[in-house]
Length: 498
Ligand code: ADP
Image (cartoon, rainbow, N blue to C red; front, side, top):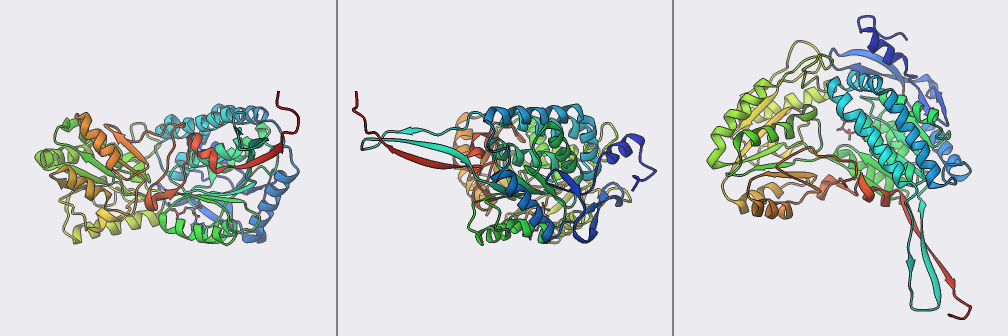
């Protein structure tokens, strides 16, 4: 179908590049029974495009294609250096089409085009280049043993990997998953989020253009409980990787357990951003603001519990409210927009429900709290003060532009309160005192600690959760461990040892 007429020509042109079908074995194909679902423009709630809705039998076809590509195809057999070159070519093609990818990302997800262009697409490209560099540097060890043996290890690919990703950073999540899997020589079936299927399909096409052989990257669009579940339970899948909610992470782990395959999970968070008494208040307000409001609060690492020392609490709240008021909400394609719509009606409703809970449970609504505008899924930048640890907004992941400010008085107390959560994805501290920074960096139970900053996501740095925020690490060298397995080879040394 032709994209809606009221869209500007460059948006229509970007949409026309999409073949909204399943990418299986190097070809775009319809779902079984010709089933489709709609992806929406979050600015208006209107349909952007109909996309193939994969059924279990489609997932089965994709897994078989990936198996064939793994067992017989060139990808795991070529040298790491050759794989790296092809991955670099894929990154080049993404780079050449940067604006088109940013347009698709913004249309489907609602994030500001300027940010998609400056951050999401470049970070995805960088991730592929980073792992392209690893592809010829994955190797084992020679191990001295207690005997006349030559023993060494090989790092072999795992096989067919099933990857399920969310909608908050569609391209970045895709690249985080593809990079280490490809570098390791695996083949992939990826189920992308039903809210944001578009950019991933385009990248799949670019991968083919770059020379990634058919069947190495298969992309499935469709529903979680149908297509996602079919993938996570498929006996032909050798490893499952998931990013999304903790609730679904538990389901995925149980699904993968049916076949006893390894699972990595990158899940939710309720990250504490701790502002100390010695902080420069203006700087601290900005860090805490960006920690929460970046990507409309739709970050698993969002600093959704802002702990502020009592001595600067009132001043901080006042300035945090000013910062929220200044935040520019609007059409993500308009220059200067900092916050577009939330991704979906469902997310919008969930955020509104939690805002109302905050009010009911006695937090002080300082600013925002309502829908922004008349249509689409926009939420006003919202700040609550007087938030206490037991309130729902201090415990549940909101995934929206809602800042909760809590008060603290002693370091021991704030450490205990920050750690009093089942999550452990990220945490941070704003202080000028090095000892305080070091103490907190070690005491906070989280996979990432930010000191006097937030939202650092360099591609070479491992990322993942403590506790119920996940299992395993993405990015960096650490992710490669999850996409290779170690084989130990033993050989007797029979000749004389000269
Ligand atoms: P979010 O809360 O960020 O939307 P979800 O955890 O609901 O994240 O979804 C993340 C991914 O998991 C999506 O691709 C979604 O389709 C998929 N998913 C959701 N439910 C299931 C399920 N029961 N089995 C497998 N995959 C699922």
